[in-house]
Amino acid sequence: MEENIIIPLLLTLGAGLATGIGSAIAFIAKRTNKKLLSFSLGLSGGVMIYVSFVELFQQANNTLSTEWGAQAGGIWTVASFFTGILLIGIIDRMVPSMENPHEAHCIEEIEKRPQSTKLMRTGIMTALVIGIHNFPEGIATFTSAMDDPALGIAIAIAIAIHNIPEGIAVSIPVYYATGSRRKAFLMSLGSGLAEPIGALAAWLLLMPLMTPTLMGCILAGVAGIMVFISIDELLPAAREYGEAHTSIYGVVVGMAVMAISLLWL
Figure (spheres, rainbow, N blue to C red):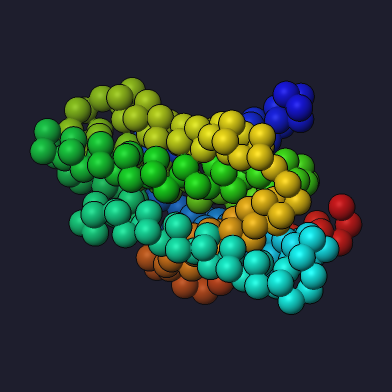
């Protein structure tokens, strides 16, 4: 069993630590590539939406229908899907609206704003909020990878892409407050550690109790979580960079890539 969790854990860790990539980009790049960020966020959303409805939801429905029959299995699937949405929605409501980490941030902000210790609270709150958001994302990546490693890779990549702007969101206010790129980078990197922690929680708490019914419910719940993240976070953030059409192109490309991948793998 221990050998089977290595790849899911590594995928979850890699997706979470992508916040550090965002922080590094903020300090290394000279300007924000808004088209690339918008396209990447759209692509990530397209991957998540397609995988959720075409793969995870259907797989959950098949598993639960086998266990409980077509009608009861369908009810379990739909209930679990909306439970996932409710869970991530409650977590999202915990985010202070003035410190929402999903607001678009640009690299150029580093040069425009002076250092201010008052902004340290914003940086810490942003890191904390992102950590709270990333916890269920870690469960989603881990459980998906446990069920299907190829699917887990796709989800990990999509979540990693969406974590890059979050890394920028953490590092900019911390840098304003401290003037230290190192502190900003480490705090940004640390905010992503909630994802492997979520994976470990899933392994320790859920895996010992795993049954086909529980796995089906988890997969449907993960689908709900990812649909909510895509609609509430990724797509609005992609449009905030001022590249509305580019973000939609990213969504379509993300769906197409996942469609081809699922057909061939």
